[in-house]
Image 1: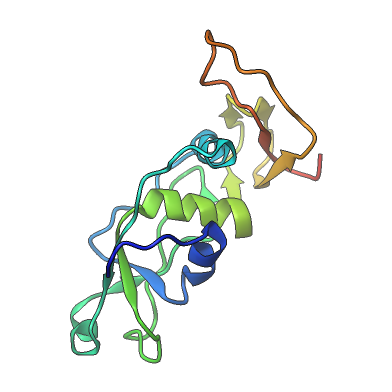
Image 2: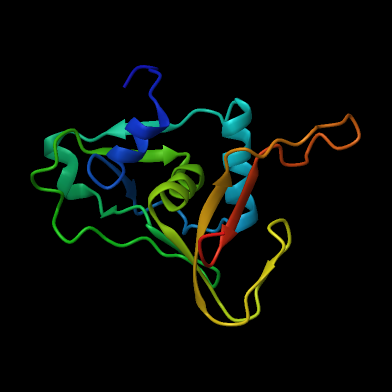
Length: 166
């Protein structure tokens, strides 16, 4: 597959419909703070690197175990779900060889949720949950923060995970 530019929406819409993971990929390990930093980088227009895709030929599909991208992150570990069939009927089946953590984070941030265990402390988001439950990412549209030379890593967008609508 040659180099091509795609929108984040196009790529996320292809997750679990065209783009899948090979069994050689590790489990999803990013934490909510890392997801927030990824979205902050995207909102600032920073590059988030490229992705490496491998389009499987029809005759090779039976040689690979294929997994779906997680739609729910979990603070105690997130495993990807094995595709039940041998990927029959999937047009242009493409495996992601590099970029799985970033793509799964986009999937969770835009379409999914994150399950937290009891008493997890999310440093950057400044949220402490006392009960097990799900959290979703939120963006305060009108928030703007000045970035100084002393703190270029500070968040420019008000992104956070929250248990309920803030």
